[in-house]
Length: 229
Image (cartoon, rainbow, N blue to C red; front, side):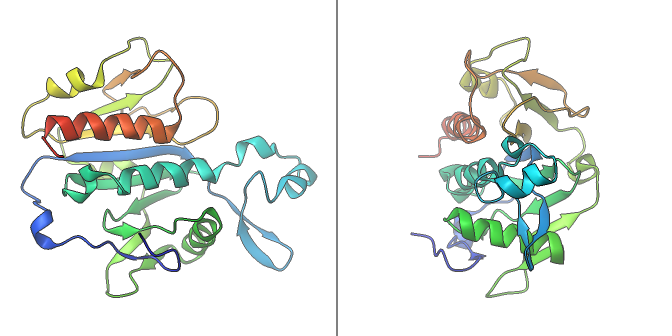
C-alpha cells in the first residue's frame, strides 16, 4: 500500500522500465485546480469544503471538482501500464491554463485531503521535489503542451460527444508496434475538451464516462496491446 503521508518515488526498479519501448502520453484537460485564501490559509477549492465561500464570491460550487483529477491520476499511476514503464509522460492542464508535468514515478497521497494540500503547495511553489532525491515529481511548465510532445505523435481526444464510437482495443491495435500515442481526456465535471492540437476525436462508449473510467479503458486496451499482465 502506498504511503499516505508524503509524496515519494514509487517502488519501481530500473529493470521494470524500458525507455526504448513505445509508450503512451496522457494529457488531462480542464482540471479544476484553483487556490484561494480561506481564513488564514491558501486552500485548494472544492465543492464540499468551500461551497459557502464559492457562493459568496458568486461562483458555481459544482465546477470545483479536484476529486475528478485525483481519481484519474490514481487510475493512471496505479496501472500495470505505468508500472511496466509504458507511461512516458503525464500532463495536467487546469481550467486557469496552468500546465503541470507529473512524473510517472510519483506516489500520490491516497486521501483527497492530503492530495488537496499537495496541489495547493504545488500551485504556490511551482514544483514538488521527491523526499528521497533531487527529482521533481510535480512541476509547472510552459505552455502549450505541444511543445513537450514528441514530433509526429498521434494525438487522440476522448469525448462522449465525438462523432464516432470506437472499440478502443481495436483502435489501439491498428497503431504501429513502436508507435507512441497521446490520449487527451477531460478532467472536469461537465462539458468537453477544447484542445485544438488533437488529430482524432473518438468516443470509447455509448454512455458518458468519468475521467477515471476512461483512463481505465485506455490502460486496459494498451496493456492488452503490449501484453502487460
